[in-house]
Length: 114
Length: 115
Image: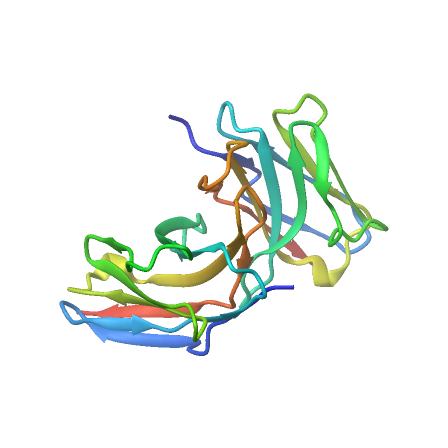
């Protein structure tokens, strides 16, 4: 089966610019996560979707970050305006809406803000 | 809130030897899941092994095994017969029961397998 697809793989922007990342989960996976992984750290959750509804966005900096999953399939994460500290890898993961199921990860987008 | 601690930022091992990566966690939950993920330079997180807290038997997957000590809140990963392809970042992670919830990761251990 196809894995979690993310694009772009790399992005370099200047501070105060905006950027968007795209994620297409594994077919049939109702749950979708966005994680932020700063260099030298483990991934941290930004937002969790169940179908097209938000389950947990408590750690999403809502003044500059937004995410949507309008049709309950693919998702977009946006940063506007970007700050230097947003430089990180942004990982998308998906899983079935069942207990005790594995989350599958995409290859991530490496963002550099200069 | 749950926390996961990996106290070894970097480790190295000779090819064909055995290495153990440490992980401790803190939680007030009784049932939960623990995972070890591998992240090679390609950045994709790959599940290595998982453990259900309600199972006393330690999980094994080929060359990978864990030592799960629930009372001590310890979850170490043993890699036997290390191979060059095992070189990667390894992350310990926690998930609340019954699952389908976000993973809480440690900071990772960079493992280098030396020929």
